[in-house]
Image 1 (tube, rainbow over the protein chains, first blue to last red):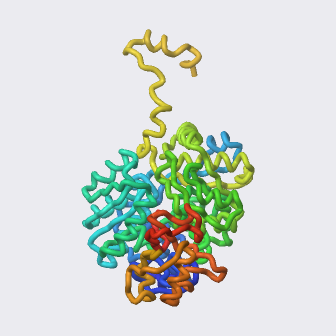
Image 2 (cartoon, each protein chain N blue to C red):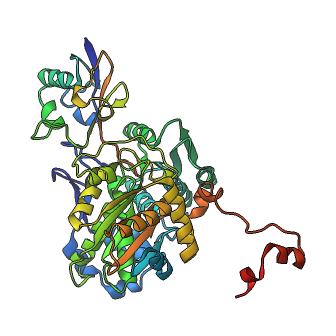
Image 3 (cartoon, rainbow over the protein chains, first blue to last red):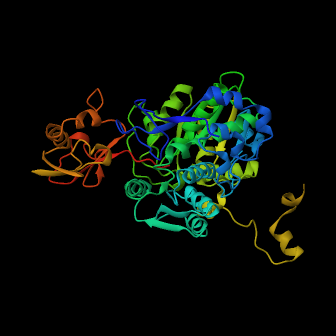
Length: 413
Length: 90
C-alpha cells in the first residue's frame, strides 16, 4: 500500500494527482510527492524496519510506490563505516563514510532507479529511459533488464569507457549524444513529450527523486536512530542533497527520530562545474548555468534542476559549499582509499576533497559527527587515477631482486 | 523582423494550440511582449511578480540559453526563440 496523497508544486504549491508528470502547468516548478505522514506514523516503527529487507524497501512507507510490485535488485542498506583514520588526517573528530559504492550497479543511483522503475511498472509503461552522466545509465539498464522492460539510455558521447560498457552489457539501447549532459537532457525532455516512455529523471522524476531519501533513513538507523550533526553530499542536479535533507526531517515527522534533527548540510562540487557553489560563494540568489569541464563527469550538470533547492538547504542549515579542482579530486580519491580502504569514483573524490576544504575553512568542525556520502565506485573511473598509481616495483621472481628493490627499513615491521 | 517563437506544450492553450508563433521584436524582451499582446496570458506564466523570468522557465535564442547571452536583452535577429520549461534530469 502507498501513503501518497498526490503531487505538489515546490514553487507555487498547486496540487496534482498521481500521474507521470513532473512540472507545474502554471509556473513550470518541479512537482514533489506529498504523503499522509499521520498514517505513516501509525504504520512505521523501528522494530518493523529492523525486521524488514536489507534494502531501501525497509522504508517502503516513505517511498511513493507499492512495494509488492517493486523492481528490486537489492539497492540500499549499504555500510556506514567509521572513518577514524580519515578524520585524523583532516583534523576532525567523528567521521563516517556512507559507502554507497556497494550497490547492485555500484552507485547510489540504484536507489532512485529501483523506485522509478517500480513506479513505471505501476503506470503501465513498457519502456524505461533516462538521461545520464553514467551511473544512472548503468542502473536503469540493469533494473530494466531485471524487470523485463525495454530501455533507452541517453549519455554524452565523451563518457568514460567503463560506464558505457557497464551500461551496454545489460542489452538495452544505449544512445551516445554528441553534446554535454545538458544537451542530452534537453533532447530527453523533448522525447518525453513525444513518446509514452518512462523517462526516470523526466516524467517519472518526482517519484524517482524520493529514492535518495533512503540515504538519510539508513544513516540515522545505522547511527542508532540519531541524526548526524553535519553531512557532506555531492551536488550535480542538487536532487540528492535536497532529498537527504528532507529524509532526516521526515524521520522526525513520522516519529522515528525523537528530537527534531539539526543536520547541517554541505555540498560538494568540482570547480569545472560548480554553478551552485558559485552562487553560494557569491551570495547570489541566481544560479547561472555553466558549460562543464571536469574529470568528475558524473557531477557534470551545468544547468542543475534542483540547484535552487540545494542552495536553500545549505543556507537554511548553516552548511557550506566547496568547489574543488581536478587535482584535489584525484587526491581525494587516493586519500579515502589510503586511509579507509574505500575506492570511490571521481564524484567521491569531489566529496572527500570538499570535506577536506570545508574542514580547513572551519565549516565542518572537529566537535561534529560528520557523514560523507560516497556515491559511486572507483572502478567506474579508473582513468582518473591510473596515471597516478601502479606497482611499487616490477621485479623478477627472486629473493635477491626483492631485496634489491626494498631496503631493510621498508621491509621490517 | 519576424521572429519564430517555439511554444512548449504547457503553453499551447494560450496560442490556440499552435506550436510556433511568428511575432516582431529585436530583443527577447520585445518578442515576449509582442507574444503577450497577440495572445494574452503568456506574461503571467513566464514572469514572476517582479517582472523577472520565472526560475524554471528557460529561453533559448538559436539553441543557446539566453543566460549565456544577454538575458532578456539578447538580440533576436530573426533567429528562432524557444521557450522551454527547465529540464529535469540528474
